[in-house]
Image (cartoon, rainbow, N blue to C red):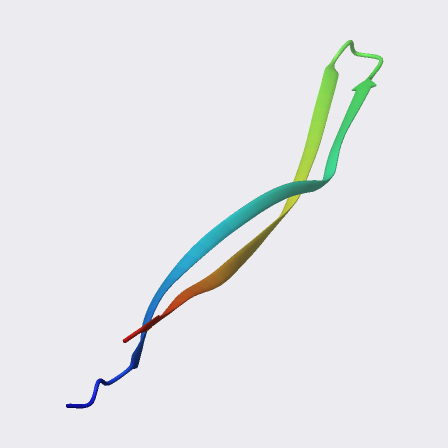
Length: 68
């Protein structure tokens, strides 16, 4: 009677998702003008710009066991 040897492999895959938002530009400009007839005009311009980057990492872990 012969005895057989075999290798048992168990694998698991994990994933990690990282998202980062970085503001690149934040600009606000206010202009106020007054005329002789005492009329005040105010203009505000605001600009916001952001950059979002997403990274997904996959890790595969295998455990090998010789049985027999």
